[in-house]
Length: 185
Image (tube, rainbow, N blue to C red; front, side, top):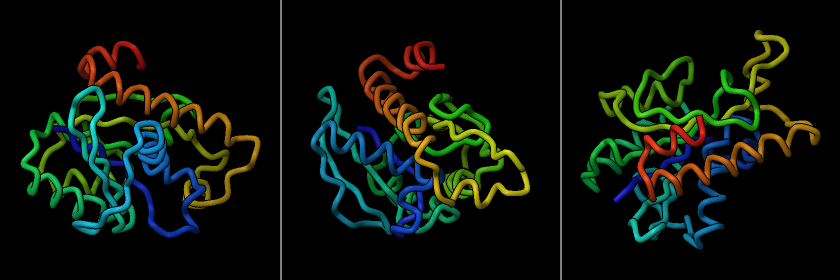
């Protein structure tokens, strides 16, 4: 069994922002594999299904980004899933838009949602997929960049990252994270 968790912010004001790339990937997986993410538990929206005969739980924490770890910790405790089967998907300013980076483990960097996840799980040893959003032109405009309006001209390249992350999830479930890292990194 796998927990596949996308980080984002719950309000519709944030739905079309760079900070919601994790939610966007969960939405894409949900659509592609016909897994409805409409149940509520542990301060999250979630849905269960199968991909490649592997049972999965898709999770979208509704706690706001900076408290994502609280919801994730409850799912991990409830399902008693090995940390290697907890995959967290989130936006990353250090990765080029449209690209992804897969890691087996690692620190949270500057991402506040990941800081919460690492803190609540008390470990950095879980897989993650970083969906690239790139850096803003002016670093002091970071907040507006990640939660602000995305120009129409950039939507297509960001969607490429969402699509690639969805493919990477399939690869992880089918052939393992090492093969997925070799293929997508």
